[in-house]
Image 1 (cartoon, one colour):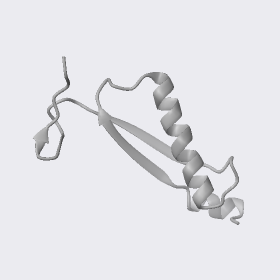
Image 2 (cartoon, rainbow, N blue to C red):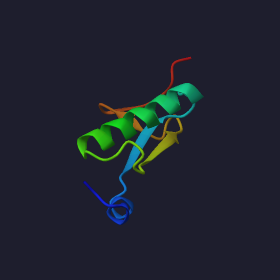
Image 3 (cartoon, helix red, strand yellow):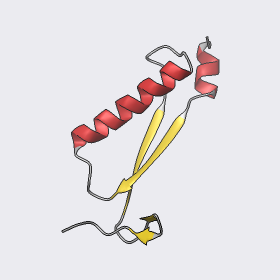
Length: 74
């Protein structure tokens, strides 16, 4: 278990990168809650422990996967 000062010093930050415009506000909330729940569960922290989840939207054409530049389907 961590005391309050240790929790603040060890506050996890998770970064999520997604294509621009694909997430609804509800999906964003679900991602943040899900990642928070996993972190506090794995680290055995209290449920109200601080965590940051940063969702970064990346414009089409600025990232790729499996050797291909991502282009959204129209």
